[in-house]
Length: 139
Image (cartoon, rainbow, N blue to C red; front, side, top):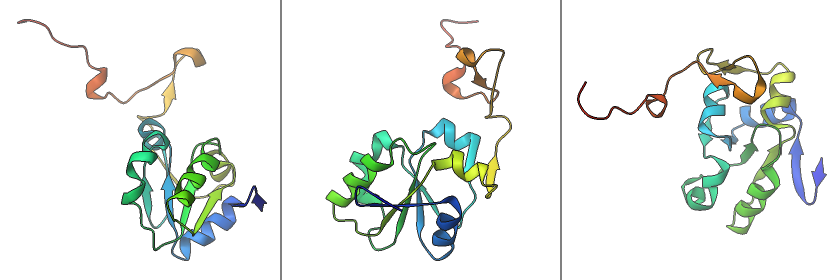
């Protein structure tokens, strides 16, 4: 499917493209990537907010499949890469949500999944160094 000149693939089309040698560019945040990761032959992780600074580290000679959580950042990321000379770009229509709903391979970290009583205070079970309270003074 073409939308505003960009190629969008269904999850099953995307999986076939990856099996044929494309690289998945995961644009999700570190936390979201820890919860569920695409289980595909090759993934490069660059959070969407860092793409402007890190695009030059991406393989320009290989097809790239852009993915995020639900498709929100794909157009912006694709246009940025096209402006920098990338020509082999496709987008995963619906992102990780659609991929997971299609039953395609994911790796889940149970410790990183969100839990809690109310969606407004959900937190991962996994502790990060930044989650630890800062120690001040001597114990």
